[in-house]
Amino acid sequence: MFIDLNCDMGEGFGDYCLGCDDEVIRHITSANLACGFHASDPITMDQTVRLCASHGVAVGAHPGYPDLRGFGRRNLDCKPEEVRGDVLYQIGALAGIARARGVELQHVKPHGAMYNTAAAHPPTARAIAQAVAEFDPSLILVVLAGPGGEAFRAIAQEVGLKVASEAFADRAYTAEGRLVPRGTKGAVIHDPETVAARCLRMAREGVVEAVDGALVPLKADTICVHGDTPSAVELVKAVGRALTEGGVELRPMGRNL
Image (tube, rainbow, N blue to C red; front, side):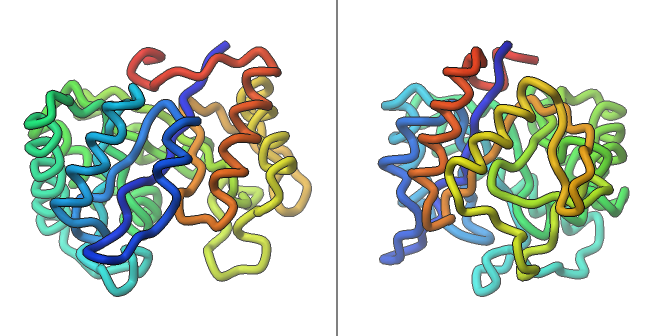
């Protein structure tokens, strides 16, 4: 039994530092690196690629909407061709920096509002999938695990991509298998032991307890801990410990698909 543990990283910008990347990197197997639109910049991208390489952590692109002020968490009314171009641009930027450091990309995971929109809006999902396939069809596309990601998953597979289904360690779920919107009370779970127990259940039983107590099917290939959560280091340590002690091997998603 094995699973990937990922984290969104490299989300600082200029003189601003966000997250505890130097600590979190020790406990994950894959990293999703911001590509300059919702966060990051060329220097931060380069530093984070080198950090991943030094710890043997697989690198993926984390493209988002062009919204630095809103951290990519505000929905933008973008046309599909705009989404496709923006995603292609961001993957290319990170891939160029990574290649200069002798690192090849493993996956692409959309960020924030773009990720959520793709789960509910097929034209956006198709634009993202096409951008990934056009850049490199061997890249894995990360989509939301469970019922909330079915349409996006089907579109990605239709264009010939490998897909990794992702669950969120520290986010609450609705009974429909969708993430509870940020800003809603209880949307983010902060207690490390609660988060760790949820992740072990996801990995071993393929279910997650929704906010109303219902058990939602959630077969995940990778579990995400958000790097900008204040307790991210404690969360990722607790999750990794619970998984390994529960007989679940941690390894990059590229080795599991």
